[in-house]
Length: 594
Image (cartoon, rainbow, N blue to C red; front, top):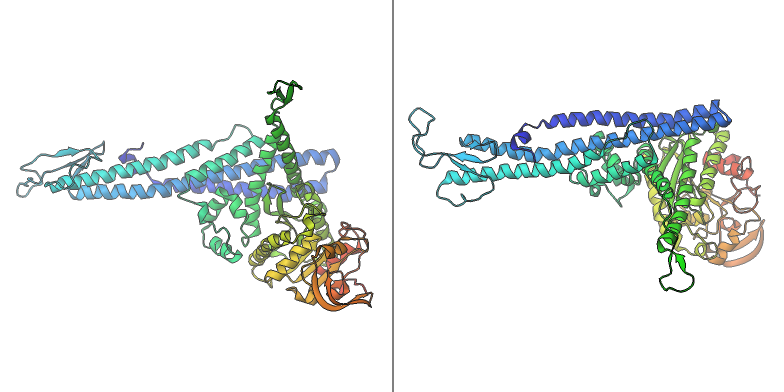
């Protein structure tokens, strides 16, 4: 426990100065990490091939991980020192006020915290400060005997002693919390940060969250608020406060729609790196004993142990999570390949079927932005396919809008149906997913600075188009164009009902794609009065159900030269080119069905 003298003499501004130094190291490490990820990988892709490129890529990944670890740990030290200084300011102020009161009353505070005071019978000799009568009486702090005493000085001294004791005890509690957290913040010697180190960094973060909860509480982060409210909260913080919240609560900050993409990316990459390390560490753990004696004493003599069965289940889950994280890491590593811009991780969650939101290029500053919503069976096992579709889309847009900046985003931020036969026939997945999509799109527009700062297209594939349709039905969807690809229905019967207006609704459907017809059987389309036509020839009339590929729906029906339900993003295909033309606003170049 600190003494009252130590609390009195503590120079809290020195803690703050030290925190600034650690903060600079953390920020520099983060900047260096960005340069490694977005610059060095690009140079390797340009200059190295084969085994040399693989070796160089591995070295760069290790360097990136080293900087990530430095960024996290140094940021935690900064936050701990700032928190310690801020919290100690209160008991130090209480102590100094008590000491000042003692001095004004000519009481003496002893080294052990007790207070000596003159009795009420004290009479001063004329012209001196010397007591003529009465003797000082020591009072141990916290006793309380003087309350209500006829000797007023005794009560005053006791109050001062109590306040000194309270201040010291409060400081001791604060010091204990932060000392325990700071003791954790140390690294092993060497320059190679391992998966175990990143797992330890995650544990360090949790320990400091508990220690610094009074200084920077997760409850102060605007969970469940609008994108504008999120942005207003962020903009109201100092840069130091922003850095501290992002370091201490990276998952919460990374999930906030409306914040700058660079901020969300930094926070989510921290979460991603630590989660990926935890997955790798857990996968490497040895299996428990496979067999145990049969407790029934009957045949067979040995049975699989419950621990082993659980281990097997955990292994399957971890393998899925690792595959998903491998897909995301592969996109990070591809930066610079074929001119591919830097990636931004705008959302990540490894639990369940997983979640991932990945942008190619910074959407906050893009002239054109495309948001792709995947459909049924999307999960961590096939993240790579959905990520690749938008990297191919980005490359295709470069042919039609040279010199203009484009960001293409894979948005998998909802619980996608996992079964074609059962889940994909239900509307609940769209009802649950559409508010999340609306929130993300609002956040994108907020970060971009308003609706006029980027031309935005939202592309829904398969059941993803159903989610897009429901989002448009529920509220003001922040998009300029909607593209429905292989759509089973958008829960509305006409293109004009969608937020973007009929002229900005586009559809692609291969003749061999059975999903549009299946969507009608499931009732995922919308009903409208009208005459159904095929190539302009009427064949049905009345109150009918339509999907985006139907002529009656009223969307621009784009030419498709691919087959099946999953080939709309084949490189060098007209199917991909037509989507890209919409994304960059080259509407007059889109090839449509006559």
